[in-house]
Length: 398
Image 1: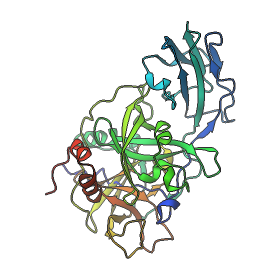
Image 2 (image 1 turned 180 degrees about the vertical axis):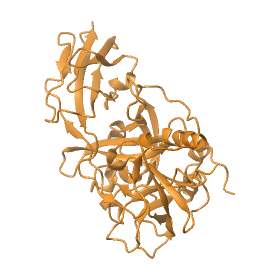
Image 3 (image 1 turned 90 degrees about the vertical axis):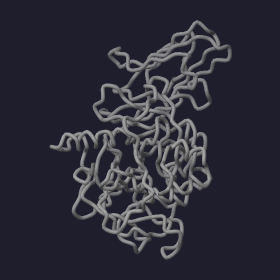
Image 4 (image 1 turned 45 degrees about the vertical axis):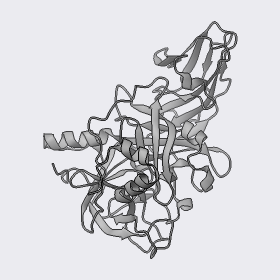
């Protein structure tokens, strides 16, 4: 089935042609909760110290448990009215690691955390909290003529087969929410896009692995992975689909790609096999090919940009000169914003031909926004990590 009537994929994170200058999308506000340590005698804390915004999209809390004697414990997060927002116990062993565990979305103005334990040795700390607004405050808009970003939840598609096909593709789209130090040492969080390839492998951009302008050695370090959340929910879901980054299986700066292994949150759903696995294409896009992008522009809900095409199928790698080799990039005219980075670029046949990674840039004479070809990504993975390539289940190159 051809999906041209609904798909046309491309992503954008405004920035220059150099990886270290890629513009990140700051999303949400980090704050350190006040009086956030619990134990046997201090079993409840109100999360205070939040920013002044009164209408959050949601909050998240990162909780670390110290439990040297392997005692039993349970945690409940409640709204101000007492409703249970989240609950988990010592079976969530990730909470007892140095990185702790993030909660799922907490749809409450200011939640409270309650501990239950009979052990004198159990200590719980709410290490971090994130306030999440409805969208990024300062996106870098990279508009192209003839198309615009459309929310998938409000997209009218009369053809039921086409609608089902698009929804199954969009089920695999996720918003990556990263967290780490900025250049001034203060905590920063940001968003990107990406797509789930298997039950627990997720592909996004390499440059989504640290805050903007951080040194190359900072990208995708263990603490960055431990702080990363992948939100695959549709806004308005009664059951969120949010997962943690467990391990970075593959990353490549020149191809601006990272593949990370996901695991469940302490209070989140288990990972399951996608209804339909995305199909990565060995075929390089050609000039004029119709494409579409699934993404989270400006950190908004699942969106699509359609009605666009490939401008130049042979663009030099983003870390080198414009007239250099290899020609791993391609340009496209899909409208994007910051937050679109890492989003899959689909062909009219519903195959992923690349991932979006850069918006229009004065540092490049080449017009348009930019993606990295799936063919170049697959070739590198096959050469450098055969086990991962086999796990992806991609057919051999034709």
